[in-house]
Image (cartoon, rainbow, N blue to C red; front, side, top):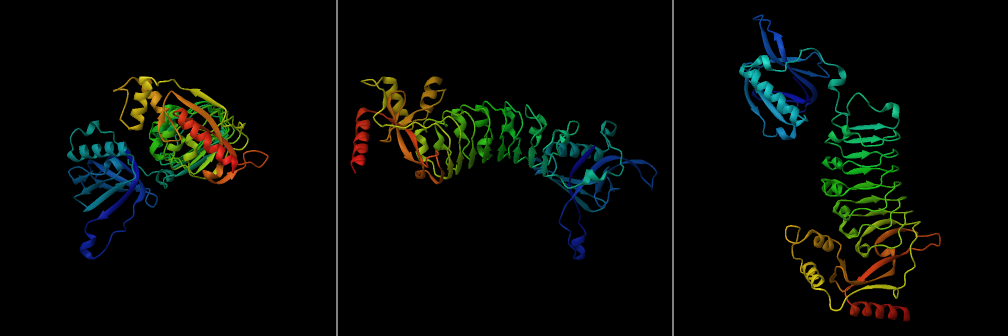
Length: 421
């Protein structure tokens, strides 16, 4: 039984002599195994601690020699084993929580001295230097010949880049790196992302530039990435659309979607309230969603999109007189912010409410409205704007919806007045 973690051996007698412990742990390998007691010449079970400075290890007898275990923070990879003789506390930290639990269970059995034959004991031998090295935080692989085929990625990685390795899918071994904060899989051939990427509970940056992605799943948008993901690079892929749930990734600060085939930006894009850097150049965008007007950006790049030239008089009317009972009820639910869900109303009605439009008057319209597009200067939503076209323009068409003829007429009057001025 072995465990890799940080260890500090604290002598409880030092304060008696007015001395302090060093107060800093060292990377170590702990082993539980049999060793011949020099005084009794009998085999006993010992705990051996090997560090980079002491690779041969220090041994501590376990049987009937553990005063207590402190395991309040075991889920965080921390625990303390208090020995009777010598009077030391063995403080463990930065351990894998499951491995630590198994190790402590084995130590308890060894302490009691019963059923020791079933214990997974180790050979108490000096460790290799690499076993007690400082945990690796960052790994960069930019060549297929350097890609690990037979060994695992270091469990302690916080930053991992694997580029130019011709990966066609995400290696599942990467998904066990629970400390991972930055994952760069750019310049590969990945076609689909596994939903289990959403289980990486610390992931703040996901770089997927220059792959073959065709979709970004709803499950990823509804995973723990909602709480952690701040930087997402989907540029140079084959995306044509993003799911409605994409705007649940509300911690996003930087979003890159250049060089795809996107024909529409996420409908509720204003829900990305922390978004400051947005790049969607060289796509197939003809219009921007109405929610786009609510963004507050620092930098915006929409160059190279085939934006339409809007005319407020060109409109689509999708109204009935009077409104259907379902439309009036749906508007009331949205305007009054009445809670709803598939446990209360049919699922298709929930979907309709999820894509409800907001009229310029502030009211909601669901399936019945008047639709048009109006040119907007992008400096209204972003401090810095990359030119939209080669002509030096910074205007782009934004969609507007109106809940009634009177709202649309009032809007046209305002446009006419601005034109006369």
